[in-house]
Length: 168
Image (cartoon, rainbow, N blue to C red; front, side, top):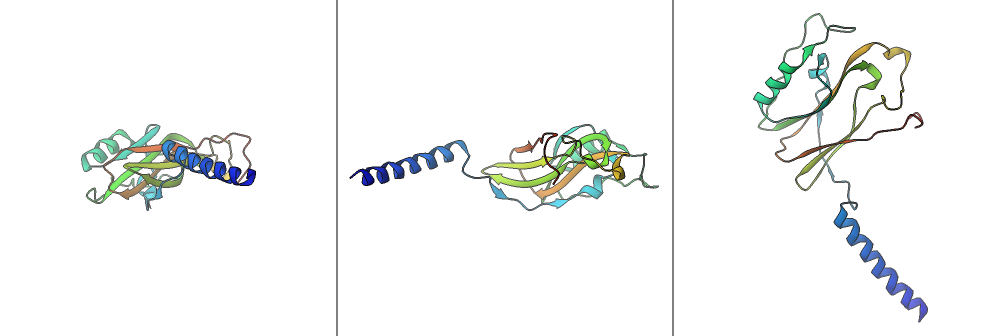
């Protein structure tokens, strides 16, 4: 009898736990979204620190005009022009951190969708102060992606890591 009661309560507890996880969104990380790196298209352009969502040619032009060509170490002799993007099929998402050690370029961990929300999870080694002698030069810190056209909200999930975190 006691065993039957425990099984009954365990099943009810599991159902309650699943219901609570579903209600708070903790049951799923979202569905993966395919993306293409646009790093090289934006690499030698300096933008203010922030997160960016570009859905139209006009938004790209305004954003591009807000930046400047990189003239420091590794700068190309001929600056790249504004990239050509098909906004009927693509949304551009990006993270910029101004200028700093090249090892601190934002790293995208995943892009997922849940309902009408797109989530871009990212981190930077700047938090952990991880660097090598190869990247002591200042450099534009930005990372941009092309994702399928996305009309809904975009959330940038910054995965801050402590300086005590172990090396990968």
